[in-house]
Length: 553
Image 1 (cartoon, rainbow, N blue to C red):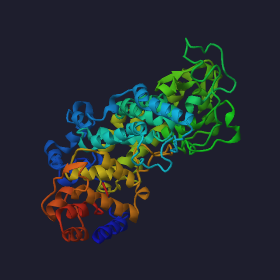
Image 2: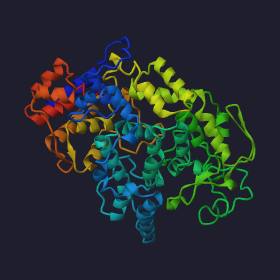
Image 3: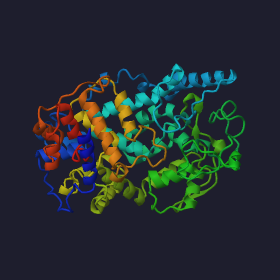
Image 4: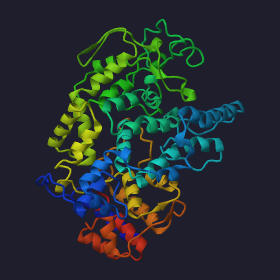
């Protein structure tokens, strides 16, 4: 293991210096060599599988990129058998609530009635880790919803032929982050990712924005489902119009906490003494502008935050304890005039007030710039080239926020193929585990050990507490301990320690072949020398996966 630690520390030393200085941009003609194909597979996909580089070169890199931009044209029939055992994936939130949440609530009520408290935090594990094995089968079943969702995320990323779709599903979920540990959100996330995020990853940004705004998972996570006009209730909001009445909140609107800052949304905070009053909740309005659209420097003020929150009052959840969907409730809505970023929203608009807000934000120049910057950072460099950001933002504006066309601009740009973009990005723990399994040709029977591996590397899936989501820049993931842990995971994957998870791996026969396949032939003399000292093929593979070159994409 000392060799493993040695190369892990070496990886840390090289983490900031593997790329060359700023180089001239690549020509607009795309080279069809192995190095370029490797680069494309490390960005458009989660790395190459055995034979992947050869396939991309055979069809042409430009054609491969276009193919990935249209996932609906790619048959992906192999995924259904791999996901067949994960029964909750196809359920609605209502079905999940009936099967998993309601039995858990009933069990808790019975324990309370018997004077025996559960002892486990009700909003999930206090430390953010996946729970240890539990004796209570009801709790095990309830926890399985997020675990199955995590397994499918890994399996799709490893095996789906629609790789860009999977990369963007990861990107957009992280952009519109929801934490599974906040109360009922763990029972809403399956529908959130499946029906809210995935259908829109290459569509119009405005459609994706509205889908998230109306998602019960987001409404619950950022507390907008409780937000109400303090002067309400207003007349006319009866069961016939919106289903609001006794049995959910009672005859009056719910009593809500005062607005909290964007960082105070973890679900584990104590409320201030004034938390009992009814009123406006600004959490979602703030994050909608700061994190989802305009960006922190996007030109909005605190007054805009308040006005957006007013426009979104009444956007709530129908029967949240039963997995209900979006509902607009007039009795909670502030019907007065609002002014958002200089745009007047006339009084009496009802639900359309919030929809007008989404229109304003989606077409704002700051949104085009902010979204383009994040996409360029994800696909090109931690320091996004400003010229490419500007072109992507212009394409965003010109196409009405067409994500597919913005992605085409980025993935066919000279900056994307520039020499200094090659291996310029450090892999997140999720990307590392997925790319390690893909590169070794591993056949995964059970993804649960891989879920635990990602968790151990510091990135528990669907459990990022702040609404910012996980960072995708090197500073968040590069340190000595993290690199040693990655090496240990690599050894588990290649040595048979994950027998329950991995049936077999397809390892090259020697160091040169290992470097050729796993690293695209790109290895320093130090890396080659370290790999050559390995005693066994599994350790050789682990050292290759733990090398500085493999940590980067």
